[in-house]
Length: 82
Image (tube, rainbow, N blue to C red; front, side, top):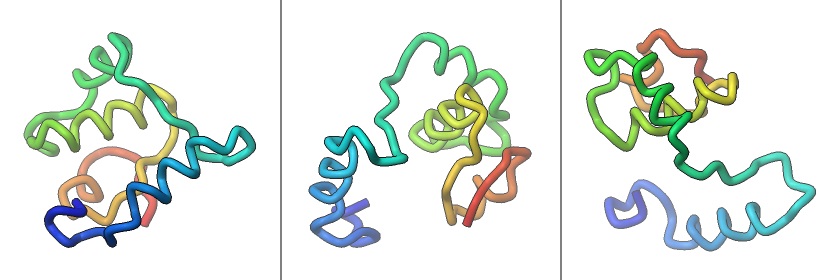
């Protein structure tokens, strides 16, 4: 997203700082077999791009809304915020 100029250059550094703070509400979620299994709950017809499907499956697995302004994700049958 930074390379496409959709996020500012400092976004990666800022995210790393957030994940380094143990008291921050956001937590890093590794890609696990359980999240891969959750991808079967994300219709490919609704979210065809693999990176977006991984994000959506992570949200499904943890039972949290996905934060995105992507039109396809927001139109999908997922709980979204933005």
